Image 1 (tube, rainbow, N blue to C red):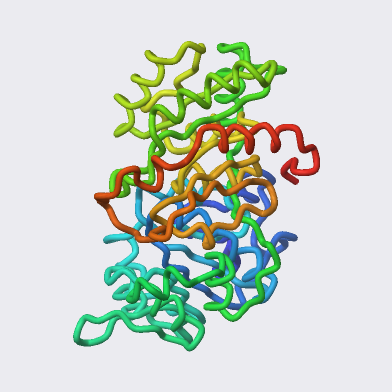
Image 2: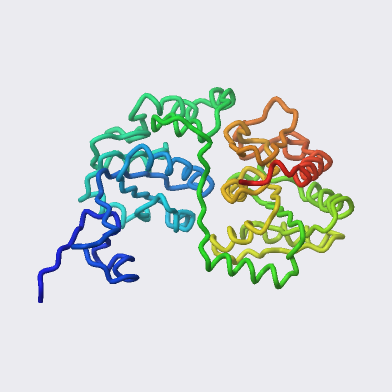
Length: 380
């Protein structure tokens, strides 16, 4: 057997199986026009939560432009891995745990970027070998600390509530400052792929959605932040006004498994026919169905970040979390109640009405109507 040249320094090299170009065209390393040598290796650590993982993808394009010929590896929680699949700016995705630890024990990187101040993320960043580290690490006494000057502001906001409340920068502006780049409205990236688009097309056909204005209502807020949910009464009044005043619409309900009973109640009490998208969809199926919407009404949760990444019009409802940190890229409206205690990040509240209960259905409806009528805010 002849000796084959193997260019293991190529970005497309997989090692345990042929690269996609050999599979598709049977090219070999010795004369491959797709050969792309790795000039710099970058490790990103951003494990969770899902919404944060998604909006952090906005840095990838900028990193690729800044560091030509770079190979970018991302360590993420297994449950968030699907958010990164098919991302054109990512070379490798590693699941947090044994897979990541065994690789990081051997591999060396030119740059490690950890944008998570959680101890488990920080410890991974300190454990990894790199010429340069940005973001957050873990000290020998188990305390999180900032690697670089750019990370200090975000670090302090995580420690002091008053600084968090005073912040007026978006999350994207903050993380770009941490990595030393200027934010130029780079957007988060989702690449659904043909299979998931076919899944959404079948859903469209089944429910007769073609030619309709589709409004998505993401009624939940995840397991931790119960106070980020808008009221069922609010959603019911909004649904009624949409049906009466905006022609040719269909409304889709979105929710996690924790919202099964909540969405069931909305379905049963609504006088308007609704379509429940279900709670058994995979993450990418959920994204594909969200992509059918012209506009999404949502709290500060994964659905909001996904709608932004999918370039949908968004009406975002805020109370206990920071509205300033959210970048809507000119395609949405933020609904913020007039209360002094906003951005408290509390999981429980003794105020009645609380911030989310204070959001008026009329205010939300006006934002929905204006956005649907404003052709200048079509996602581009």
